[in-house]
Length: 179
Image (cartoon, rainbow, N blue to C red; front, side, top):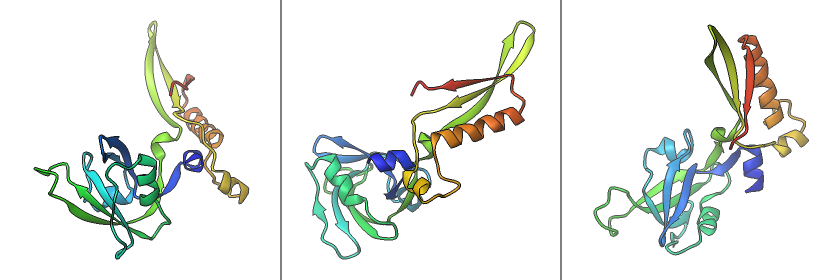
């Protein structure tokens, strides 16, 4: 989990999960992840079973800790996982379906530094202000150790964003560290 939050990527299906009584409920889908791309899962669906590959036994996960369910769902990219779910649209808990997904690398872009430009009034003058939002600090340690030139880090991303804002000729820059 530490490596995932630091590198802003994971290998899995790209679904944000939460406990809902005895069930594991899908809260949201990571845009572009396997779950989102499949169009077979929706927020509100409840996961009741997880099976490895096309033929692995589907293990009932009702009542499990969320960390244990996530551990069964995550896995190496290009491998398959099957989920037995109760769709959010189901009329009762006996209406289940099996969804087969191929795990892949999921980028957690919503946790990366980002920018926007706003215009504020200062007396009679309009000022263009760049706002750099940093929701988390991160560093892809593995890519850095491999000496990749384009590895993700808060420092690299903020440096690139500030250069872009300077090219846009902003009058000032605000760093938003609230989150």
